[in-house]
Image 1 (cartoon, rainbow, N blue to C red):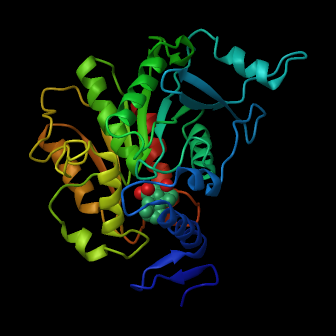
Image 2 (tube, rainbow, N blue to C red; image 1 turned 135 degrees about the vertical axis):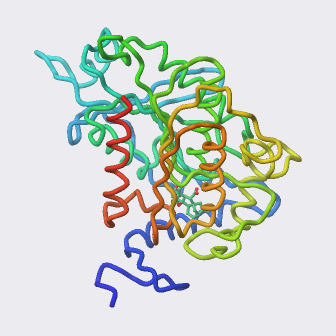
Length: 350
Ligand code: GA4
């Protein structure tokens, strides 16, 4: 029997907590009003419907945040989350925060996590409430990490590679900041992380970093979006179940990939027929989280295989009976166990 806080998914006997079902279902319904048949998108309505939260210089559970404009020409914003700095004398929280950004490198090592939110390349932003909450969690989870959430340009208005370019700009900016360096070696201990489309962006930014000699301490990909022309078993089996339909996925790829490209484009299928070879590159270790009820899971597992075949390390956390979005709410063992995996991955590679 399902308890009062649980409900059975229509299509099977799998239990998905009621609050997760409501949360993800609401997104699903509003997203279906925003996508148009002709490939355009109702950005205006999208901005109106989404729950957002501003940056906050006042500590909430020991974490503060501020928005920073990194590039005027593209309007690239980042939201930076950090452990609340100590306020001295008559200083305002805003002043304490700004002086934290002027600090010299700290002798105590701490991780920097560059985070790319999900939303299939089209939805959400740094101020989307669920992502603001997740980034705040990462600060404390990882023992005082600095999290930099990137407001990358979204499709269909901005296609691939705009989102990757924005991620790359954010990474280069982070490498130029003395206050983000730490440890005896004053090194940037930077991780790239993201869910859904954000996981895809983290991968492609990591490739650029590897090609340019910027060291990445690790990649953390939660249910990352990859794909290809072929239809996989999980796509056919899970189509329309557990919040995601294959037709929706196709719509998002069409909106994101360069005009006329198909899903074997390397942005979507990095180890497919048009993939970029990673064998010779110093690619970081990856933590890859896969939910068994996500129709994209076969592509995520193929991605792990591609990394291994190129000689790179990947730790796959495969969660039976987990759906997309399970990591937003602390209401399952999946949530706690995956958070623990992230904590230990960051701590042991920092
Ligand atoms: C909404 C909340 C999260 O951003 C997300 C989204 C996911 C995706 O972009 O991959 C979904 C959406 C979200 C709900 C319905 C499905 C799946 C896009 C979409 C059309 C990452 C999630 O977990 O669910």
